[in-house]
Length: 417
Image (cartoon, rainbow, N blue to C red; front, side, top):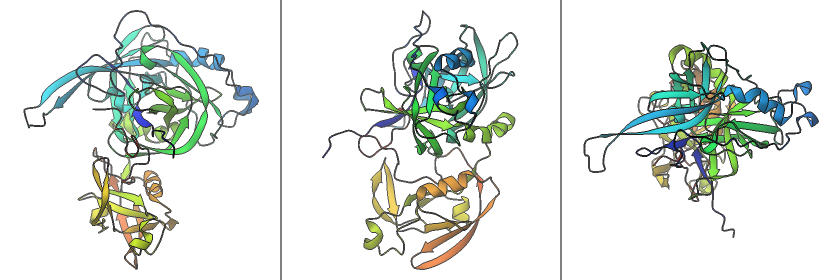
């Protein structure tokens, strides 16, 4: 049997200073002084394939994309503060530090996108452009469940270079991509690669599931968080958010993940208007029907999503959906329960496994009514559920057994202690 270790998946914001560990751990990068620009000139060979969004004449070389788009990519530094409580219940203590990541400009009004985990608990945020001009930034809003933060700078006196937002819908495995960011404090770094896989699923900082994530082998490291993943025409198709590591080293193993820009565009108007996204919640955790338990529990199906837990006072709880009462074991410190209702259809659409539940609910809005068909024992029931708005907690329609493990079977929560 192979002795390979399963990679750790972590967020990729770097940490500056001591006192509070964020992102992928302390990397010993201080402020001030000269930095080295690392420019990987490996060709993207964009002219040999249509651009990801289908414009065959939109393809550019890696150099052309870098020269045009790098001025729109910024370095973000956040002074952060967090209250902690000792294991013995001592009074909470304020700890402070600094988090560093990347971001990019999307309009002439000074709107900048980055990851939520880059500016989480920030008391002050600054943005540095490629011309080394640094300005203060305001956090307009955040949505931790898709790891997105929207910042705003005063555009007066700034020669802003907004990046064009594309789409990840037509991106295919093998398509060339580029990442521009500030890994380990090395500003304006370009790396190139390909789309390694699509429709990955990641856990957001607050425990919700992020769907349709893009996997790439373009080098992404601590400090790249919040930077753009670009297609061969230089359009943003994703926001770089997490990496897989070999464990102790904390460095990339060539597997990076980007939140699709389509997900971001769907919630951006709400965040700019209200400070948060208007995302729907059912209020359950589920797991795909365990194959090994179909016979053991005499289950009526080998497909569907078994409800492992139901959030109190959630739409699922109000509709009477029931969780399992048999503990299968523990995963990431949580009990994995089986024996609950099995969701087999939502609005008439077959549910093959846990991922389908999250994907369907993610496309709905708070207030929408859905019809859920469940198996309870041998009985088939249909239940009407009115979805509400996601809260800051971490319970949603995700699988209760982590889809991206670490150390063999667990997920790393963005490298936080």
